[in-house]
Image (cartoon, rainbow, N blue to C red; front, side, top):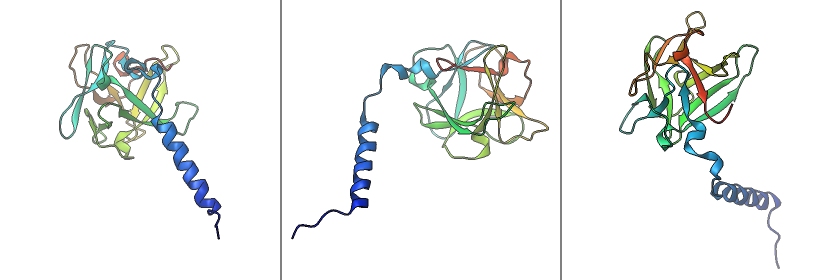
Length: 178
């Protein structure tokens, strides 16, 4: 006697096969390295995650078509009147997330991804430039801290400093998205 497969099991197998097929599809040319470069308004340079063990520094370098300059914006939603949402920022090449430790001034690094406040960022769009200010979620509302660079030189490490919407060194563009 032949038995019919359980309908739920059959649906699950079909769903898993569909997800696997979509996941294995080749990526189109639209997702090239520069498409997701994080370029600073003040310097015109792009952020890069350096290779190595442990927390790695995030520095600015001339924008090139290299995979260590690819960043993925993982939206959490929560859009509001003054901000465009909250997100985690992950380096595609290293598969590590942009982190600043503590609620005061500190250096930016990439480290293991999680959903901790020190690697979640509020995105504030400047209506005049179209660039974004990245405000760290681990800092208090009365003293918010933002991602910045202190000068326009290559190899300068990104830092978290007191937010100032007038500072071009705190404004960033996701190249190719906006």
